[in-house]
Image (cartoon, rainbow, N blue to C red; front, top):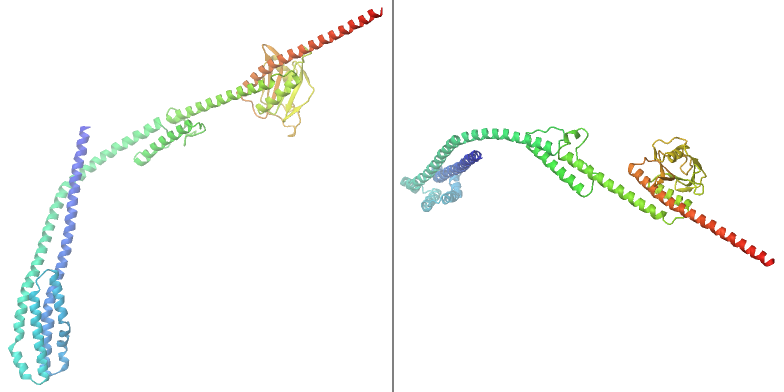
Length: 500
């Protein structure tokens, strides 16, 4: 760990140094560029100053002399035109030069003195033109011989030479700044190369090692993700860090969403992308464990619902059968309730007649089909059909494939044949009282069969109680009839006695 920290610290120091040198080089390059721009601007400005200064001689003074001398010799008015032009733009030349010098913060007092001298000379030239027009050529020649323009040239020279020196100084200073900046930039570039190239090489080597290490970590992450969370069965590019990390995050999100759904009681939730192809790959990881937990919880929920359904159904059936004293009415209640509660299509209750015990026959006391109570007279003996077989063997019979001619109870739906048939003995304390037959379009599930069997035990207990009640009522009726008969006989004997 200490070695890793030292390497990281070295990389940071080298990068900071490299960034610092790059920053300094960028600043110097920027400043050097500004110096170049300023130098070019200054050179252009000094050239303009020199040009403007030269215009005083070349354009103003020479133009004025040319016009005056030509006119003095020929008196041709067209030759005065250069002088006229000079008079129109002389002020603009001086004003322009003054602005340029003020931009350089140069003293313009000498320029103003030169302007005054030039104006005096131009005024003299104008007088000379007037003299020529007045035929005073001798005066003009005399003035020309005085060569007053030379004196003006001396003043111009006194102004121009210091100005030229000043402009050259500005150019030299700018050039020196530029050369200094270029030298400093070269030094920084050399230092940058001496430090930057080894630094880049070291960083490249280090990055190559880190890349290999990262590839190993990503491969391990992908393997751990597949081993412990979820394996889609689809290979990933372990060099694509975003893809590998995103896949891991998605698996955690799937697990969180799956657990959240289960915690809210949603046992129909599925693990996304889990299918028959990759099911074997996810038997021992988190996805497989969550699926098993979901199935277990779902089955527990179903079992609880079925137990509650069975208990509730038995309680309701017992409540309906209470206080019943007639087997026929009891049978009608039982078959109707059993059909409706088990969502069957029809039910028949076969009971051994109360008054004919051990006759070897079962009587159809109640039938309910297609939401109606049916009244059918039928008796069945032992070994006769499935009902007789169930009665004889005292064991339930489940028939998943019903014969075409087995049930012929017409209904509003026609003679549709149920798919499943279940016959359960009505038995309590090893005493069988009859058989309950249920037919349905749907196959009876085990929890429904268990419910029917328990219901038959309760029905048997109620039948036993009703039969005891009916026998008791029959005995009471017979006893009452006997008493009434004895009373009649006693009264008859009394009457005969009185007659005698």
